[in-house]
Length: 202
Image (cartoon, rainbow, N blue to C red):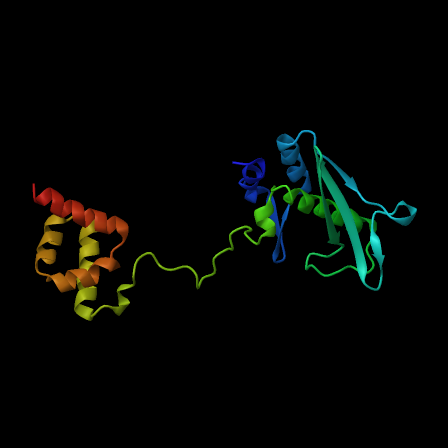
């Protein structure tokens, strides 16, 4: 495995944070981990006229640039000065510029593999919505009334640990009825039923 692939496989999810719809990796954590991988690494911030660390104007916005060097390899990166909605800030203050530079540095490190998956869109898992959450056990409400009552009685017997009654009820069911009601029991109840018949067959 190459060094690039090794760094790519590092997981930074617990150090990433969501701002709006976007995910960011803390620059301080990113730089610390990068230096562990490449102790000789250095970075620089490009400056323009008058030593300013940003380029652009109030009509189109501003851009910052960084360079990261490891041994004889240098990767450059650029990033517009943007807000948390990824909209260009036309009148940025020094804090906006500083934030953009450190975000640019973090993105620059991704050119060496560190946190690259975040920029590939493989960011933190989305929080599931109510529509995404499927019940582990199928509702008994869609069962015919007779079978609905059977399931309810069996569940009650399981809670009371009345194994003999569970066996009596179960033996009155045909194969089709058993197949119909089985998904409506929790995994725990299914295990209990299996144990009842396993122990009863010994």
